[in-house]
Image (cartoon, rainbow, N blue to C red):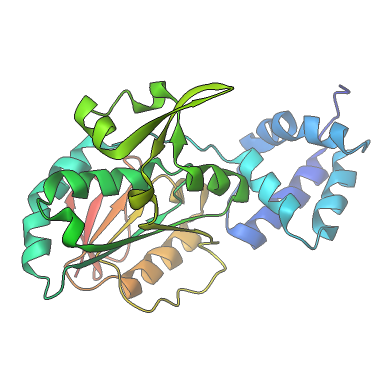
Amino acid sequence: MVEIELKTDEFELFRRYIYEKVGISLSDQKSTLIKGRLNKRVNQLGLSSFRGYYEYLIRDASGEELAFFVSAISTNVTSFFRESSQWVWLEKYLPQLIASKREKKIRIWSAGCSSGEEPYTILMFLQHHLSDFDQWDIKILATDISPKILSKAITGSYESKQLESLSKEMVIRSFEKVHSKSGIYYQVLPYLREKVMFRLYNLVTDPFFFKNRFDMVFCRNVMIYFDEPTRHDLIGRFGRVLPRGAPLFLGSSESLTAHRETFKLLGSSIYQRL
């Protein structure tokens, strides 16, 4: 594989393009990351320069190359029951949510769902804490900008090491053990998978038009890729799809520096819609 140099002006082209398309803000230090993660792709396409790849990228009307580009420069790190303190808080909040319901209906948005651990964790949490779980109409909207990672999430298939944070009871209740030619894996049970609607969605450019408001929104470790104006706009949009009193969950390294009139800090990166 040929090592291709990423020139400063080429990096600037990528930086402007990704900001305009998906709101991701690349610092100067990300030049090395771009070069390292895309060098193989440039070689695969038989191109001799990153400028050639940039031109290939912007000419691709299908959007597939943009999706590849975003997946390459972002990090899809997730796990079941990540941010443990938030689940402790949610356990205390759940009775309040249940008491407020006239109908047994819950709607949740997992924004930036990656490979699916987050929305499936939400389901397992509700399954564990609702004695009449099967009587509830539960729907989780799980969105991400990467078609590749969404295709994995839809299958609900995981290796045993990915389930290490789950109790044996949860694994038995929520997964089926599958033997395949490539080995053993665990798949989320069909009746749980059907409660999750996976959608390709761009948080920055796609419209926030939803039939109903959400009872809570999870958007964890997504805004770290955005600059302050983009984060400010996104939080404002979340405020419009959450009813008063509903929680918004962010990643542990994320916080709200604005929108104090719309959201109040409740716990570890947990905010309440005012």
